[in-house]
Length: 275
Image 1 (cartoon, rainbow, N blue to C red):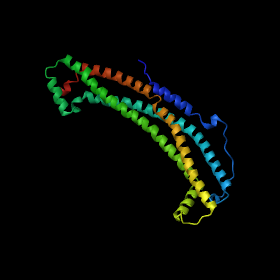
Image 2: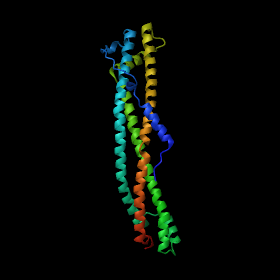
Image 3: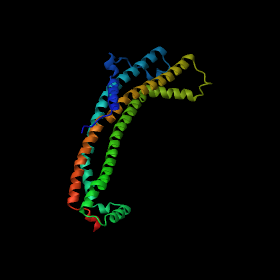
Image 4: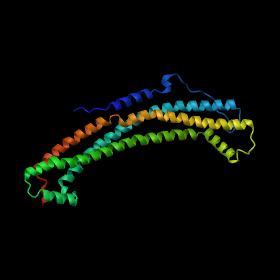
């Protein structure tokens, strides 16, 4: 049997591949070298000069962001694969626990189900117990496994989403915490706290203030669009290899289950509930 992936996954993969073409690879874009300016004069100096300087800083930060993204996306896939391998290794431990549970299943059954089974099996022979093991017991085992598989898949998704959320938080925090951004925020917070509507400002200062707010809004929009674009990759990272991984894990489980049922029947483990 071959694991089939839905068409939507291939569409998602194509969307990721297209969206992952960085600006630097689409066109030649270089860092802009510039001398540092006096931070204290950035909000009151020549508007054209200071605005161009800030534009260049934002431009350079975005280029560095793309470089950092390339490293992050690679490490994210690697971390996910390592985590999936750990979870596959844990499957063997889980199977041992499951085997111990059903070898001593009398202690794990609810009183209600135990009474139901005792009453139902009063006149059973070995063939009846074998039939029960291959039907109801298999259903219980499958239910336990699918719950384990679901929780494991959720933990993989949580790893991807968690690393992505933390990374983008750290990146935006690094931008907002740059010296000139912090000083600018404090400067305009102070001005606005002085009852902006009635406070006397020069036209230049008002224009600086308008530019500051416009810049923040523009940066937020560009950042949101950039993050949204990368969400294609995050969805790809969450779903890539998952179906094959689940298929391989189920194959391991299925082999164990069939072998365990055969041993359970041959050793007549049902006697533990009858004695």
